[in-house]
Image (tube, rainbow, N blue to C red; front, side):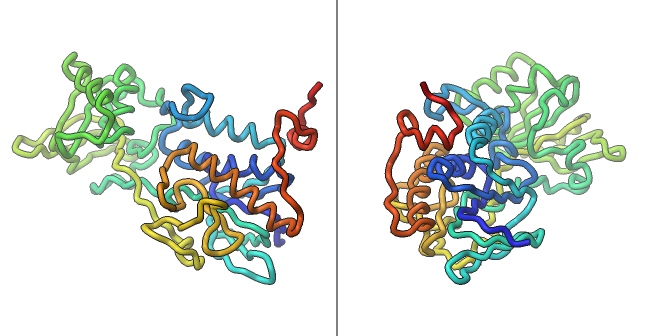
Length: 342
């Protein structure tokens, strides 16, 4: 069955979820597609427990906490989520966009919002024989439940914020913890690196710099040991129960590159009035877009979603003036939000 919709959002990360809200305020119902099995994008997949400090009016919120709040905010507009599906085809047909997914679901949409973050992203994996067979049991590229590492012998690989953040978070939970970094300089925040060094000085963790994991041993699905090469030194063999690798993301635009959009450096070029692409009716918000002065911040995606919604309203209801109304005073907005105001 082909689904008819005024607005189709591709990407259920923070920008895509806020796009639901901004469209809903204007009376536009949304369908949302994401290739991941859950909403949240990078916030949920990569740093659900990591604190975020630069969301307006929220002095501190976790990645998952932000997503939970955005989902709650979008609820009044009854969005329909299509998760675990990748968009494989987008083309224009007779005044609408024909969209097909990897599950052969078809949509006819008046407007399309690309909110796909850095595109179809996958964590860079540990290139060691046997690692793939242990993924999800003993080798991990994200942390779903920090308590699962309590009392375990843990090896963490990487030198960025994610690796160092989890060193600090798991140092008191793990029975043993070793950080393995291929250089002696770090991409993580200075304060976080200093915290890890302090833990090492206190004898709580071990840090191996200029080092790489070269071999792993396992008993079935369970990791038992890690072999580490250290530049200029002897190889180190560690007993290990769990290995976490944080080497960053390998972003890929995937099928987006074939949709006829103007793309520069793996990002969709948009204007700054509507955040519309070179194809009228297709908008791009969040980290997936590019324009002069672009800053890849979550709050930038929120601003872009608001202006894109107003532009879409003019397409969906051509010739009708789009009035700016405020949620504090507008009875129409209150009705759409399902709130009662005295």
